[in-house]
Amino acid sequence: MPHVEDDRSLRAGEYQRPLSYTYDSSLAGGQGGFHYVFEEGFLSCSVAAQAGQQICLVSRREQSTIGSGRPSFVYLDCGSWVDNADGNNTRRRDFGLVCGRNIYLCEFVRDGGTPTSRIPSVQDFFTGFGAQPHCGLRVIKYAEAGFLVADATVNDPSLYLFLADLHLPPVTWVHDRMEVSTHVLGGPTYAVPAWLDRLAALRRQPDHLYRNYYSLAESNRREGRRRLARGPTGGNPDIFGTAGSDLAIFVNALRSLNQGTKRLLHFIQLGDMLELWVGRDYQFVPGSTIRPRWADEGTSPNLAANWALETMIQNTPVFEALRTLQGAGLAEVKYVWGNHDAYTMSRRVTEQLELLSRDPVYRGLNGDILAEHGHRFDRSNFDNLEYQPLFSAPAVTNLTYLVPVARRAEPTARTFTSIGHPSAMLDCYLLGATLLYLNQRYDQQQHPFSVYIMGHSHCRQLFTFQIRVEYHLYGVP
Image 1 (cartoon, rainbow, N blue to C red):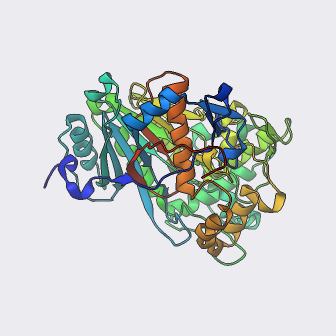
Image 2: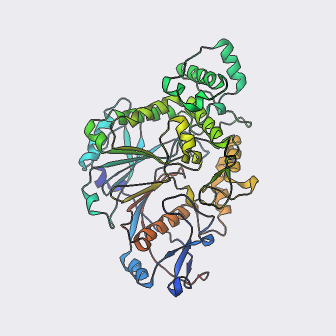
Image 3: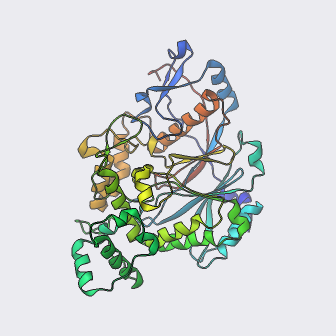
């Protein structure tokens, strides 16, 4: 069996489709510039590049440099870890792994195989992980970053593991209060774990409702029963499904690796860990300010913490595994927020739940990695949305969960709504990543990232993107 890095069937290709950049030669005193919207280091984006208030300046000299140098970066979409990624019951157990210039798109496989690598620390990870009970993995695609990688990166043995969307469901999406009442009358009662019992979000509850929810959920776990999430159409709107048992095995396997491997391992979860939109009223006030505002400064943070607490009750084994990972001796454990759990950007929420604070983006590997959830480049899902009530991303999300079959229409709907916008959604993500790259390299005169990593789309991808420059006057093809 060839090493992963030498297996031509696994080698990622290049993305060839050209992207459109809105360029205005009148900007910067006639030197020209791109129109775009983003806040470097924070999450803010717009419905289209043309709506931008900020400018990525590229001088004529830099235009020539880009044209002759043909810079590139590797694009890694880490997919998702769910039972229904797309409305067609597509099962995903995806994760990304980066070591030096080597990038791997991987899939967890219970009792699966162990690939081989010629990179020593990667091979140690593969071997150690495969030795854990019920653990295996396969490499779906492999790429090598080749342009402007930092000198320190080339021989860096550090391992960066990226886990994307989970959409952990709340207990109230599976059980209603009538079931709680019935269970209280005739079912077993279980004490909540000590770590859960001490959470401020649970201690401030006025009654035992949440503890009773825990008894109901724990009873189902212990008896091996799986309740389908409730939905008026009879379909199952819970996309996480049975992925929790696999996720707990996966996380506990990371915790059980040898100390040498764990000292090199960086664990980064890329957002949409908690499902805080389904069946909920959106708790941010839509607007154009950079940082979202609560709908009600007094009640909204507690309400969001309650919803997060419900996901912790429904998915207790997953949270227990993640909590133990924090003290397992890894190089770092980090979390990014996504659009479905953007409320966790506030420490008023995470501190009530003893969750690690969330960041907007992650940077690592000597500046060669830039990772984020990716929703700020999605014209329907960026934080602090300006939207019409019936067509907002939260409203549409609730519709597709309440009527699960509607999720299958999302690709068609995305195509329809892209009319008048730069291009398809993948191209919008690439457009945003490329502008970030240009801003780092030319505007800020920094060493630019070599690998851009995201989740959000539920569509795993790995390829190299070459930046080609074809300039034209603003608004004229």
